[in-house]
Image 1 (cartoon, helix red, strand yellow):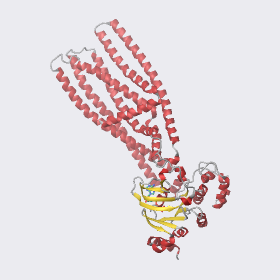
Image 2 (spheres, rainbow, N blue to C red; image 1 turned 90 degrees about the vertical axis):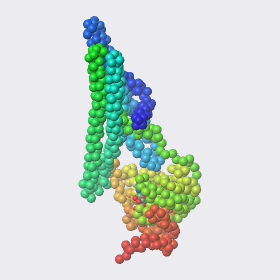
Image 3 (cartoon, protein in one colour; image 1 turned 135 degrees about the horizontal axis):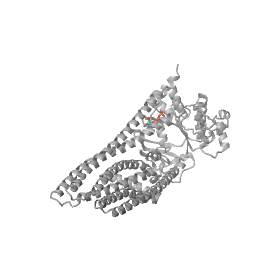
Image 4 (cartoon, rainbow, N blue to C red; image 1 turned 45 degrees about the vertical axis):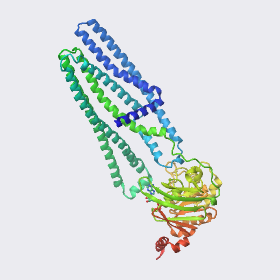
Length: 606
Ligand SMILES: Nc1ncnc2c1ncn2[C@@H]1O[C@H](COP(=O)(O)OP(=O)(O)OP(=O)(O)O)[C@@H](O)[C@H]1O
């Protein structure tokens, strides 16, 4: 019962959404359905009257009935066609309007506020749902089929009920026979309709799974085969077999699911035919019996036959339309989500306060824990105070949580527990743009975009040329940039005609230059030299050291020797802080620090 209620409620919300797009559409659909449903019955009733007149030898009356009936059928049919056309045109327009509304909502989303992937995922699904559901046109077509066939069934059933009930007490036991037949019939119908409901539920579930499978197929077809680095890895490591096997497995699954979907639709049709056939045979027998014993005029045989055929056809059409409507509901909910909750998670009340001098800033982790979605905790109850002073090194084994800690610091993630404060203020309360402006960051997984090199460095369209030139000189990019066709204005990537693909080291240099250009109050460097050759690496470390006199910084490094540059070292192990202090002190007192130091030193001994 709840399922039916949910489905009807879903249908109602979609109707409200569609009605807001175009007020005429619902009326047009109802009117078209009504005319289409009525027309066959006008013919049935007219023909029965015609038959009756002829059996009674009233030939002039018969001609009148025939003319009236067929003229009405033609007029109603033409009118229904016209309304249907109007409905299609309006639905197409409404579909475009809905698409525009959805895209307008997307445009409102500031990419900078996309702190989680959730909203982006809804955006994606809402886009896909348009393709899968067939859009507004499909909805109204299915709605029309549903209403039209429901009306047809109700009318046909009413006619037959009238025949079943007609003079039911005329002969002894007829009432009893009729009631028993109807009771058995009802029980059977209830059973079959439950079975049908079960099949419909399964059908919707498979339809949703198909959407996920389609996404996986797209991953292989669009992302893997279309990305240079992936193709390179596939060729180099001869991975085509393993990748293709995965792809084929997804494809096979999609194929099987599709077959199952067809199978279920087929079974649903059989169930629905069974439901109607059982009913038809029972009432048919009753009515014919009444005609045989002359309770009902023989001319009604026409109404009976035509009504029964009409009901049988309508039940099949209704079943298919209802299943498609349910699938549509399932898809359109993502569009509804975008339209109703399009704003990404709200920020807390912004506080317009941040000191401009880095030396006055203190960041504090207060019992902070963090878990990635669908994963256990990776940072556990971390507490420490980080004054924005000098150089701090963050060290620890692979996977100990260094990058995660920095991402929390930068508000790329939000702690699962605990609070991070900047000068006592919960960082979540500071406007995001104002907060991130404090930091100049170079990540291990730095991103270089397919836009010109200068815009990559300035992170902006308007560029301070003097500042840019100085940074290019200072950070050693001038040499190779000088050899590019348009120098620093050369676009990066395969989308441009230059097709400039910077090397790994050059990309890292761009990322470092971007951080230098930002000139934030605090530098964060996540393994800033991992792709650099030894000469560039030495330069960068020397520069960090020089700059940190007036620009405090935090850097993550695996080179334990580099911690001698730092004023303080924070050591992480399996998501917990195990040591904090100056490198010199740790080298004397910390067994963990010494273990890391010695294992690296061993590599340089002969
Ligand atoms: N996006 C993510 N989703 C799920 N788990 C993640 C994600 N990013 C990192 N992890 C997991 O969190 C843990 C900490 O990862 P993190 O990248 O912070 O470590 P790290 O100390 O920076 O490692 P490394 O020195 O190798 O760069 C690891 O176990 C990692 O597998």
